[in-house]
Image: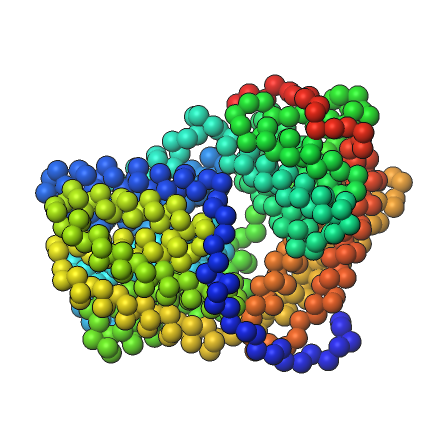
Length: 567
């Protein structure tokens, strides 16, 4: 325990300009953008041909599932997409049945808030990834306020299920062409970030931020490679060896050739053979090279943690979501809004890992929505030229939202806002001024009330999670140090210990960053976190040297060893 007396942290300055700063787009920004267009277009155009565009809201609910799991290997993607479709159908079913049983707006808002909390908790616990719970909450909340009868529910669910099945096919379509595409991209990212860290370390300007980013990228690459459990392949083994080399670079940056790592990354991004990583000091195919992956096989055999154990730490976020969404909806109703679900969804979209990130998301949401209503007013004359024009505008907004949201959330919201407004016009055109006014008011209500709820529900467990993460790092470091010092340690034990310590360090940094963004809590042991990270990195370096995994300093990036790992 730290000897320092815990004291309340002072209030942080609220970022505004920084929250709106644009970043670099994702390397695969076009994949979700094209996928959602391919998923939305056929069902919507079919309904246009049938003259039933009023049903497009239900097919779009299923089509939007194509936004998920683009970073997952295809074997894992198939399962995740299936669960997303089922989750969407479950939320939609609850919403439709509730809407058919009551028109009491307070009851509908309450049900919507509870659904949003459940969707938030489950998506965070399963780490389904962006867009996480927001799409599911939008679908269930919007349909709560569409008049239904019980007899219509099966048909509407069938439309959503059919569109969801089509979205699943769209998400899996690239598999025959590039069966290891997600794994290749994750491996290339790990190699590039490791090279960037090695360059700063060798230049005498070692950056803790660069090191943390590199460890996080390597950890993400392992998660991607291990996602397809019990499905080893020659290509995947070769990619695992490359990630091992990235890990080695992090542990011993002074002995790493960054140019070689970047050359491997460039080669991996393509569709050719995966570069060979064997150490020239060893005979090819020797036991030492094969030992690198012993820990990988052991980790792949470990069952994932049960869902219930991952839901516990998310209780404060779930309570924030339920309370914020409910209050936002109630205030919207009190102001006479016809669509309180807009305020509800705005509140649901705010909640991030901590209060600082939640504030930034609130700023981004408000700015994006205010600009978005102006864009809606500009495109409305085109959208009202006919049903086909309306569908084309919806498709354009879908593409723009996914193409831009990677730069910054507010930029994507500029397209999401007119998309949401255009969806309300699928059953029939409505007064533009009324739609714009309602959207602006509900956005402000949702952001203000939602953030107020986040302030009211503090996460007092954040400090305890940091303490547990520190304990986990200390234990993993002691085990790795003991094995590295033991002359009789087996390669499998060393590899497993190194991998466990690296994962513990990544978890500590993520936990500390999340806790640092919480307000109104006792002081965090920041000094202990830094010291624990430094000690862990020294132990990782010692373990790497004990394993003999350091690359030959004399090798260069011009070597072109390859092995036949054709997909």
